[in-house]
Amino acid sequence: MIVVADYGIGNLGSAYKALVKIGADARMADSPGGLSDINGLILPGVGSFGACIGALRSSGLDLMVLEAVEAGIPVLGICVGMQMLYEGSEESPDVPGLGLVDGWVRRLSGAPKVPHMSWNQVEYINGGGESLLFKNISDRSWFYFVHSFAPDVTDDTSGICNYGNGFSASVAKGRVLGTQFHPEKSSTTGLALISNFVESCHRKVVD
Image (cartoon, rainbow, N blue to C red):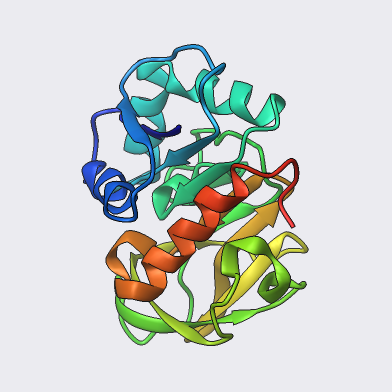
């Protein structure tokens, strides 16, 4: 069972629809619950960092995310969902993130246009191409981005995108995973990535 965190903000249903399309056993969760029947959790996010994490905490689903990580259940953050995994964001500097990944989210610098709303390539770093999340997905594949902020490039960055300057397009820290791009809006390549995440949820460790 893959659960999509539904905290009432943004287009949260698109990730669920993608899971259904690939045949995954999935459901939406709008309140915290037990983890006994959960194999993986997806944390979507659209909009501002402060509004998203405020809604997440109001729903109590932030605790579900933290408990899932503690229990070794894979978590995939998408777009602002990925940003919320970090310590914080320049967009809402007084609002702490979940702190599951070291580093901060910063406004895109040197970008030709903000927001970044386009297809762009993701280049693997730090062994990202060898991870199960990108299994059978070629380096420099194209994914769809919609954002004005993105996380620092750190040792946990598994893929970068160059748009003016490079930023973290994907992150992997143990079973905590994230994509700044929208795999559910990235055609067959994005669906392949979501399928890889579902597959990883049935393994003891993420490669």
